[in-house]
Each structure stands twice: as structure tokens, then as C-alpha cells.
Image (cartoon, rainbow, N blue to C red):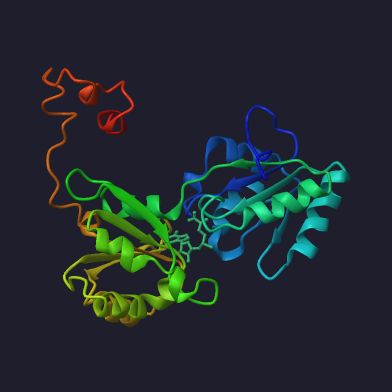
Length: 278
Ligand SMILES: C[S@@+](CC[C@H](N)C(=O)[O-])C[C@H]1O[C@@H](n2cnc3c(N)ncnc32)[C@H](O)[C@@H]1O
């Protein structure tokens, strides 16, 4: 049970901070303050923008965690913390999404070092902003799936991309799949999905060299191969990737005009309208 890693008001210990997708401006105010205060910043290598490290913690000791195992990382952070140094752990995007933060936090807690999460902007949100769309879109997409393709970590049976696409109203956001776009699309075609289903690939969302490739299940694989991207992109499958085809929402239509007296139309109730109240 790892329920002790709540941020709350208690700010003692090592924060596991979401650095955001790349743009230093997308680090939260709390994250920035903690990084600025740190004597030691352990960061996730190339996915954390060096501009952010330069801007907010140039004077701190900076350690790239890539290629270091838990046996190296945990004593590094524990020793620094016990020596009275201020330690910050920076993960790319949000540490709760494909971040492997918890195993480090549990190991640190086991050594008596308290830890807590500070959320960040996950790359799917940066990608949707780049595309100028919503991941949920009225009458187009009612759900969002954060997923990854089969490979060394995930078996073929655990790969649910085809299931998500099959629902028809899910926006499927694929992390860790840039190198496998063609294979993933081939599997979707083999499973009988509509070849014209929109797919967008956003490389380095929010970075200066950000790039967008738009296509379909049938065309995107070749386009990504031509562009030469093998990592650091988010693949978004579904109509929402285009930002088109949506219907005017209830919130700014009938509800705003005072119609709908039942519970489901009450924006304060725990129902559909409340989730639309943005
Ligand atoms: C190890 S996962 C970390 C995800 C991260 N925790 C997050 O919330 O975005 C790395 C994957 O995230 C995606 N990613 C990270 N930063 C990105 C960015 N700026 N633009 C597009 N995709 C990004 C890529 O799919 C990459 O393979």
C-alpha cells in the first residue's frame, strides 16, 4: 500500500515533481519553487528540457537518472537528504503517467525518507493544445485512454489499443510508441478498423522544435517514417485529433437558456452536466 505519498500540506521530504512536457513555462508554480530551492535535482534526462534546468536550478547539483538503477538512485537521494540537502526529483510530464515514480518513492520511504507528488502537465495535454483540440469533444469523444503499444514491457495480450479504437468514441493517446507507429497501424488495419480514422503524431509538444504530422490509420506510419521520428512523440487516434465534427454542447445551449429542470441537467449534480461545466 502506497497511500502515504500525498502532497497535502506536509511538505517535508523529497518532492517527485512533474516537469511538464518541455516548455519551462509549463512547470507548475509549486514545482518551480521547489526546483529553485533544491541543492540536488535528479532529472529524467533528455525528456526534461535543459532550458528548464538552466533557468530554474543552474546552481544546483544536477544528476541525470537515465541509465541509473534504483540501487544507485535511492542511496544518492537518501544520502543527500540525510545530509540536510534539499532534494528534488524531476520527472517529465506528470510523474503519475508512465513515470515509474512510485517504486523510487517506496524505496525512499523504506529508508525513512518521506516523499510526495507534485503534479505536472502530461504530454497528451500539451499535444492536444498543439493540435488546438480537446481530447473529449461533444458527440465525438466521450473518453480518453492513455496507453502504450506492445513491446518489451507490454505483451500482445496487454496491448489494448485496438479495443480503445474499436469503441469509436475514445481518444487514444499512445505514449512510448513513436518507434512503432507503422506496426501499431498495421495491427489496427488487420483488426478491421476504418483506415480513414484520423491520427495525429505530435513530436516534442511544447518544445521549440515541436512538429505535427496528421494522417489516418492508413497513412500515418509512412509519414512518421519519412519524418524520421523514433521517440518523443505522442500518437493520438480518433476524430477528436482533428477538432472537427463536434456538436454544440448542452452547457452553452439549452441549459444556459434555463431549460432542463431535472437532476441530470443540474450543473451542481454529480452527473453529465457537471463534468461539462468548464
Ligand atoms: C517515459 S514516458 C513519460 C511520460 C510523461 N510522464 C508524461 O506525463 O508525459 C515518455 C513518453 O512520453 C511522450 N512524451 C514525453 N514528452 C513529450 C512531448 N513533449 N511531446 C510528445 N510526447 C512526449 C512520448 O510518447 C515519450 O515516449
